[in-house]
Image (cartoon, rainbow, N blue to C red; front, side, top):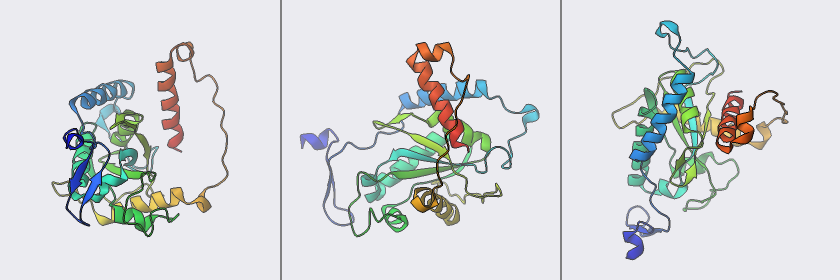
Length: 245
């Protein structure tokens, strides 16, 4: 009873009978996190002012997609309960709305993850595996919103885990079908399917080409070498820049 009161164990009689969770409930998008994100967004906007004339970056510029993928936001055991999955989607909606206008959010169900698994890690099991990374997706209204999200969310700690955020190139021609939404933030099946197809291709060893090393010179400053926080921020910026390509 004490553990349940502290949120470390919960029980549910939904679905496949009695289930217990031995981990804390995923923390909500708290006021503190909102303030941290607000400050990151302010700094990003100062460094990246909108184009003159208010022109929005088109989908043919820089990035081929308005969609971003987030790892570390959702955990496999939370996908087994409809209420907890809905709570995750609501939190993701709040996070996206705090950055820029967006079209939709998507977190795959446990059944969808099993169906797309190319390594059979989750095949023939009714339980979620703790070592399986769960992707979450947001489609923004324009490229600028996606760029802001990648910069502001990267390495943000949520529920004790650092988020890993990246752009998702869904189409070679740079065009995306708009996510079809209702007020609950659900998305069109086509967009969700293409998100999962991207994850499958990304995780397929046969689709990976040999790696290439790129050396960057004159990137770090004296402040980076003397201050760990400045160094971490510069390294994060380099990762974000590399993931664009």
